[in-house]
Length: 362
Image (cartoon, rainbow, N blue to C red; front, side, top):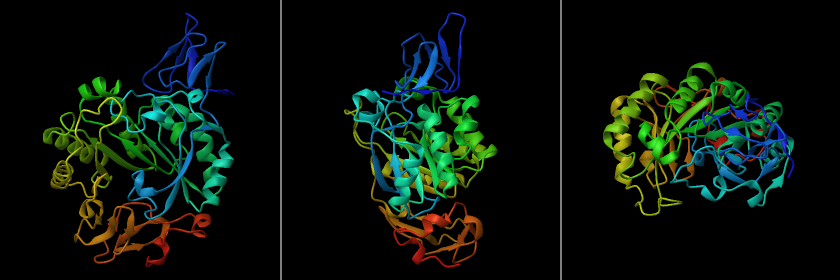
């Protein structure tokens, strides 16, 4: 397997390499790989085994990421590698994230070929997802740069567990991200994900305040672990105070998987109540996911409550959305601006768009 030079590391006095890409700060002796499996000390140099490797591609609705306010109704080319820098016991992609690349049928691919594939399949964007793209940041950076040069948008789906040192380069050419805020307690992060909460909160604040990357947040609600109303309220209050009331928040249902097969799926009522709490606090765009809930999937105008984008699973109808210049959108009924990015890249707009462009009004 070919290796690619890695960034964000230095050699310590004892000869080990300190990886500074994520807050795990793995110290690696010669021949050792980090917690993520794909960053390795080879002869005193840190290399990435994830560069140019993929465990597969899929064309998805962009709402599956989930992103509801970024090019809604379009398709996105999704792919990932293997490994992860978190150890979530509930991982729903564990067959990818908990495997080493040499245990997977991984095919070599260049950043340009990733973009080629998106264009070939009429996808206006590419998603780096399935496992966390933070651990293959060098590859993600080159893909985002190549995509931007050719009029294709790039999306990171991530847990946000990245250091201040690395995040600027990682997100420099990224257009949108969904960050998985797994819980709102350090106890959960420490015991269930083998990581820490504070670095994720710092990433979220930095993304919102210091970048132009479109941001949405997902909270997977696990019965008995992170679904208490008090925790949900604190999470929503923090989002409102630190990120603002226009950041879309998705409450999604857990299903038994990996090392948590003994926990029942999340009741839809839990998601509905979480959405109610968030809206009571004043968050404008709150959604439920992994359940059939038309109201919980629909974008409503925060001023007049008219339906702006109706969703029934992945059937999308922007019935009340007016598109403006520069990607802006507004409510057809009252003219209130709707936060998001609703304008397609020029190149992608020439292709198939799941019908979205046919119902827009300017």
